[in-house]
Image 1 (cartoon, rainbow, N blue to C red):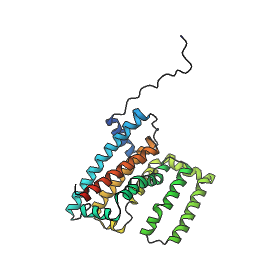
Image 2: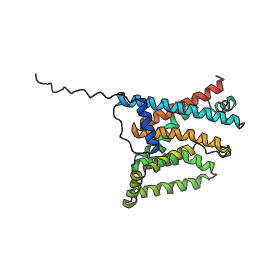
Image 3: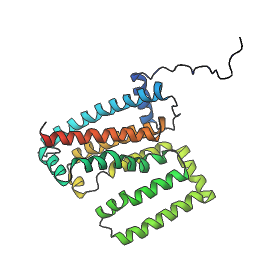
Image 4: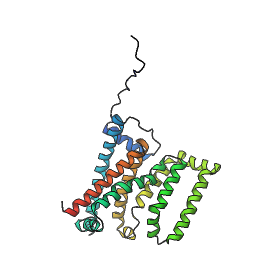
Length: 259
């Protein structure tokens, strides 16, 4: 019997990744960051993998949060309590906080710190422009840089970046940096992502051990989101970032409500 022309064989079954294999792959990536082959199968690979990564990240962040709270208590510092949570919610209601922390911030930060992990002139310029329009003014304010000099510097920086990425000789050098020293590129973006969460002078007045734990908390999140961006795609890293920030917001809400 002749096979109908509309018939196509089913795609071969791909077993979901085991948690042990996910941990092993993640650890190898942490030790030696590299460009990863993008997973394509959504139901059998991507969904199980994103749930595994979210679960591992949640466990690590809970452990770090407990360590931060314990160290803060030993040093006589209240890192997070009902008064701090109450102050946060007194400045804004839940809906604007949700929109900012869970929706807007993850998209903005992923565009800046994860989009350009895969080399592309467009990706790098989009990341730089997003930074200059969103986080750049916050950094300028923290450094007491007036708006007009900041705006002029931002225009010059964007022009310089455009020239470097279009000039034939320099464009090749930038591309080779991504190919030959990807680990340096990856951890540079990850460290910058962590440091830009500490723009207030009070952050650097914290005891060194406590500051390093808080910084590690952000570094771990950055590593997971970078790994997710490379292995699953940009949308998945945004989703993981949103989940992470949602957990933080719910913890704050729990403290404020006295749960």
